[in-house]
Image 1 (spheres, rainbow, N blue to C red):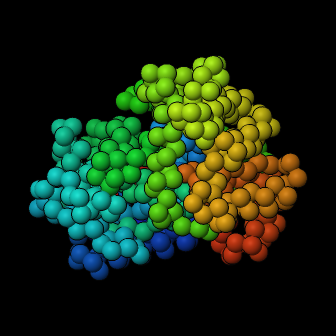
Image 2: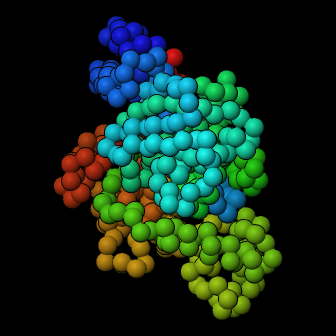
Image 3: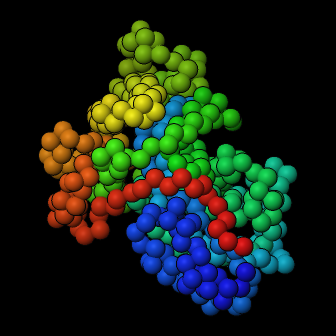
Length: 425
């Protein structure tokens, strides 16, 4: 569809029903303007083209902190913050992706070999996704795209996974007639991040971005994760879901992240197993002396965290199914306590003086007075916490935290039911 036709639909409000589903009732005017700027920028970059529009949500982790990489359970939800793209096709094998605020990605997908010089770059992610599509027998092709995102980098809402799933959705929709499931697209993104980008991530982020709504994911068999959807509205239950950016950079934290699965798996290896999903607390207790000597205390604590948080996800899911917000929030707080004390991903061990997450948790607990919940959000070590604030206190909480972490540090979230999708063609 040409830019002028899309603009008419935006002006006439023809996309408002969809925008309401994606973003909520507030801000429709802002979304019309946002999408209008996106398509205008596309024509500015690439000339007049037939344009397709895409939207991929960010995600919020609701339960199961660092459990996915050891074949555990997680609870996650797609959110109303998204990465959107305007896309037009080319007749060659070149890809250009111009993302607002970042250098443009430019590559030729006739070459799908991993390039060591691209490690830790978006170019690597895109090339890896294209390579995996081909390896699985799917089609790929060249395109021109520009994107803008409200899933801010370093926010703990999975901006990188959103981009991976977006690229996978573009390939899957345009070149493969929607033959791929959301799970396949997520797995392709994880493959690229693991093998081309060079980060040993789990699959939770990609699956949560690829699916809509709240999903419980069981990674007992990572090749065929079991996904259970649950429809729940936290606001109707009396609470506003938010994340708070405590500051701090995720740069140079790859070793901290990688140590968590490595240490958990080292404990499992003592019993001849590959991951912590295959061992029990009783086994750890029976081999405590040998494990302390072989793996160290922190590895044991992290294994205990895995076992307990893995069970907590089942309790959280059941609480949501039964509309038991009290039990759910109790489990959220318990998970946060376990992450702080046993998983130990609230601040980096090499720089213990930098504890923005710890400070944000302390301030939030003093504000809540046991009426709500909070926990470290996502990978940890720097970045965000997740909070559930009584609706009537939400605005006061935002003002309270902004005093310490700056205007805009608190982001209210809404669970989005729509999956990664092509919005318009």
